[in-house]
Length: 347
Image (cartoon, rainbow, N blue to C red; front, side):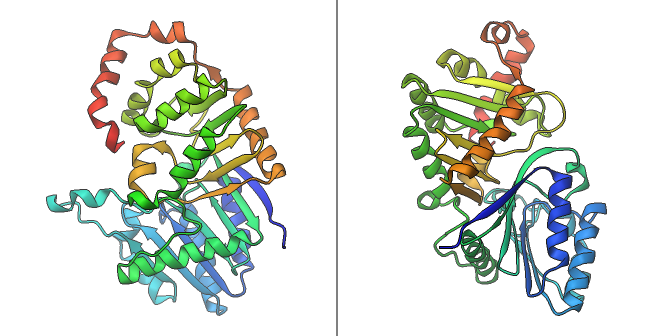
């Protein structure tokens, strides 16, 4: 069986550069599924490559979420790209001025997948937006049999947009449908089986009660549970909601670490040197219960070990949250955190 080779990129700029380089040498096809695709300085670089490759006879398909990529969805530029020969589809179109479409802001396609010539695959948390420059993230480039699963996942989602049908999922392992929350269940099962440690990195931490209890039970079994989050993300309300869990987490023995410098957008999990994942899924209700997500899961020891090293490197520069200091935070901060509780299920 063909081996799977991989390479990690730990910030948006390096990932963009690698993705552009692979797209530039595409000979057959470029399939790109993206939650955030903005026609700015970064987006134009990708569009320039796409247009150039179409002229060479390469098939280019772009599948964007209409909410995450709203500026592109709501522009005439998308039509111009289609005239150039790029196939573009938008998932779950929105109409923000119509109240009855409020629920359409949920059930988003949050995946980030790039497949070049059905041989090279990328997935992770990196979007296409100049504002993401400087963010600490995790994107992985893979070559091997798993790329076929990524291609199948893209085809399924492409068909959903075209025909309004949804089939079984392979690579895109999480769906809003209860019976198709594959990644959520896999992550829960892996944590339940953990014996030594559970290391998680997420930009947003607003877990479901079920998931939070699974972490607590792991600690009670003697498992070392550590979570790295940013001190501040790009969503202050979600930050406040996440902080409302810290008191209980620290009381139960869950260790919280915060990165202070720059925006942390990485979504990874490493368990017992045996299991790891990297992809688009955040540890919040919106991501795990309401969005379409895609994560690469591996039990390859080298893959797991490399991802663990990235986690340890972040841990070395993160600040350990101390329970006593956290309990002494201001009354105002506690009040703001309390106000977020009614909204946890949709954050």
